[in-house]
Image 1 (tube, one colour):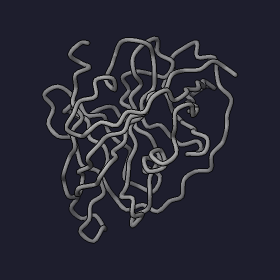
Image 2: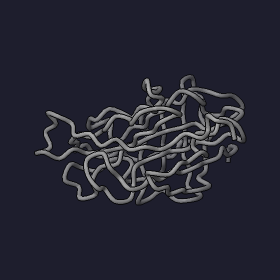
Image 3: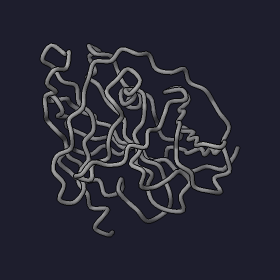
Length: 218
């Protein structure tokens, strides 16, 4: 496995000054590449409801396209995929900490949907499970998304591709997850969220990653 796949999942532990959380900061995913420092802490109050699920048809997957929208039946309706790239430390950026952002997905713009190889890396927020600031897409994924479930990714101009979940991986925050950063091998999608025990602001004990592979039109 080449060096670019040996990147380490790290967690940021930064309290967000000025956030209206009565001294409590919410936290999400921080990812780091080789030699990168800790990623930014994330968190904000949010109270919007999840979009209503839908069930669009699958495409043929005969060409790569930039993802713009994702639907997961029973989890989230058509929600935006934001092409956010990475920060200076090589960390994939996460969606904004807004009522909409907590249900959106971040994409690092490295591997497109339907690409011939490599992992399309996505991230989403997880909020404290006590619901004091509302839940987020990561919470819904953790409680609902299972092996065999279908995700539908759409782009501009009618492009659409379905993926089926093939694997769920739980990794301690201190350990690496090379498969998430793979740039070679068969194409797949991966969504990463914070999970496990929330030990403090920006500090979760685990990362959960779902891997999904393209499926043909059914």
